[in-house]
Structures are given as C-alpha cells and as structure tokens.
Length: 258
Image 1 (tube, one colour):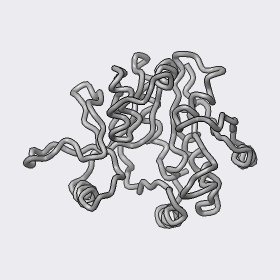
Image 2 (cartoon, one colour):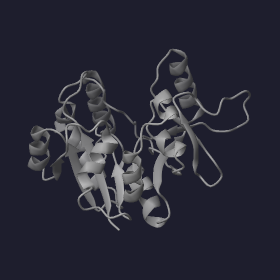
Image 3 (tube, helix red, strand yellow):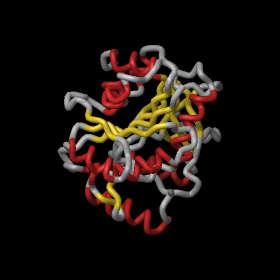
Image 4 (cartoon, rainbow, N blue to C red):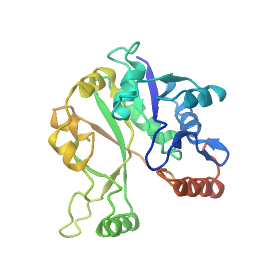
C-alpha cells in the first residue's frame, strides 16, 4: 500500500487566473502546498496534477513531481483520479489536497492519511476540528450575513459522517454542550473508492449543497471523520489576490510551518 498525496492545480480561474503560481511570501502557492504534503509522515509520494505546462515547469523547478491531466476534468477529484489511475492499486491511499489552502499544517494532512493506513477497511477519511465558542459565534455571524463559506459535519459514535452542510449543524435549539465541528476540506480515499466515486453521477444532495462529499454518503460509501486541530496556526484559503496578501501576512506573523 502506497499513500499518494495529489494536489489538483488548475491554471484557469475566472476570479484569479494563474492562482497556483501566485507567490505567497516569495513561494508559489502550489509549491507551498506540495512542501506541506511532503512533510506529513504518512505520505509516501506527492504529485501535482494540472492542466497547464507552466505549472508543471514551476513544480519541477522546485524539485517536485507534476503530471498533466485532461483539461476536461470537472473538479479536483476527477483530476486526482486521472493523475494516479495508470499505476495505483485498489488498496493504495490517495490524499486529495486543496491547492488553494497553503497554510494547512502537515499534521492535519497526516491525520486523514494515517487513519487510512492504520485501518485498511476504511474507504474514505477526512479531518474536522471542534470549534471554540468564539469560533462558533463568528461562523454563525458570517452565516447570518449570507456568507456560504465554512462546512460543518455531524458524525455517529463510530466517527462515521452522518451529514455535511454549509448550514451550521446540528441546529442548537438550546445549549446542550454539543460542539460544532468544522470540516477541513481534504480527503483520503482508498483508490478503489475513488474509482467508484468518479464513475457515479452527481447526487441530489451534492447538487443542493454544492458539496461533493455528499455523493459518497448518498451512495452508501462511509466517510470516517478524523478529529484534529491547527495547534494555534491560522487556517486560510486563497480565492483572490487579496486572500493571498492575507496569507502572506499570516506567514510573516506566525512563521513558516515547514
């Protein structure tokens, strides 16, 4: 069994063309994510999956591995599958990382990867973190203002996901001391499960919430939730040049992760 981290990196973006190559504190964003993945102890191999030769060249310049994938890939999951389908075995673990989350600590990446390595029966794992009351209040305020960012998850006593939502779940009718868990958007797939997922059509709840992981739940593929935390680091994703500036400010304030 090999654990392979794949970083989908599409050059074209309506809001931020060339985003993977945008430098954050002097380092291209895709290279930052690659270094974080390589620092996770459970990861055996890191591949950047892209549709543009410029990204391939940039990754190789920094000593990384990149492969070209079809421009027709509709999302990162399909791109990750295309990157490994020629050599992955059914028991291999494919860790699909967001190429626009350059501040994800290696231990968060490792949490999902290690869970899959330790239990070969798992088909899919993804991390989540319990929100403090302050973080919950900020998320609730943002949702009330109409923001859609931030996904929460509820799970059973065996740590298998029951549902993911862009609403805050569970709804707190009264304070019962139940923490709210925010989903961290990276996934570790058994290759056999990844192969099955990309062959399935988008599901009704997936389309309603615009959350691709719901396709797995709607088709009976269990998702193991792995609890972790950022250990005081500030998480951040980049959707605009301004987001990249904020990420650089966080690096300057908190230091490099690796």
